[in-house]
Image 1 (spheres, rainbow, N blue to C red):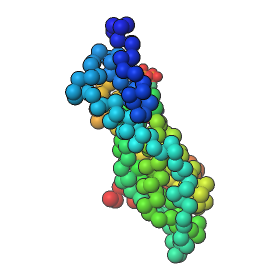
Image 2 (cartoon, rainbow, N blue to C red):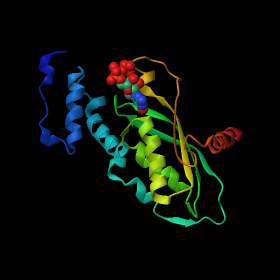
Image 3 (cartoon, helix red, strand yellow):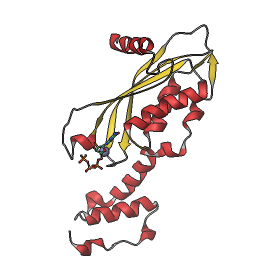
Length: 200
Ligand SMILES: Nc1nc2c(ncn2[C@@H]2O[C@H](COP(=O)(O)OP(=O)(O)OP(=O)(O)O)[C@@H](O)[C@H]2O)c(=O)[nH]1
Ligand SMILES: [Zn+2]
């Protein structure tokens, strides 16, 4: 790559968000013209998109689970299945995406169902690895509502394995995290969770 391209062409004062300036330079460094019509607004668009897709860094996942309701006699498993998500892999900054399944057994208090999807959104909107999101989901639920048990499964495709590197589109990664009664020693509850998922 031409070393001359490394010079910043535009003064940093022309950018409203510092992320814009960095993307302007990256476009220049890959050998493209950041001033051509199609790319002119791209640094601004990317800065706006980055603020959106990494907005979970400014949010506290525990807060969305703050409001609970009496369990209304429920002492069996509640499953929220097929919650779609998109996140960004922290190694390559390209998307990984798929579905999250969460099961928990309440301990006197239940959570509004939408709050699990909100929890997933906050954790996904950060640079992530799939294992960490899975663990953070069950840790947050465990810490805030102290259920009898909680389990989460994520199935996802990683663009860093599809569009680059090993280039294996379609391969899926499945991660599991469990706490309380679902923990490794309690196969009965875990197998039940997976049987219930398969029925759908
Ligand atoms: N465990 C885990 N690995 C991930 C995740 N997302 C991406 N990776 C992997 O992170 C690894 C980074 O490996 P490196 O050897 O440091 O980087 P690389 O040379 O770009 O690796 P390749 O992808 O094999 O080309 C790769 O094996 C990716 O597949 C994730 O969510 N969890
Ligand atoms: Zn990656």
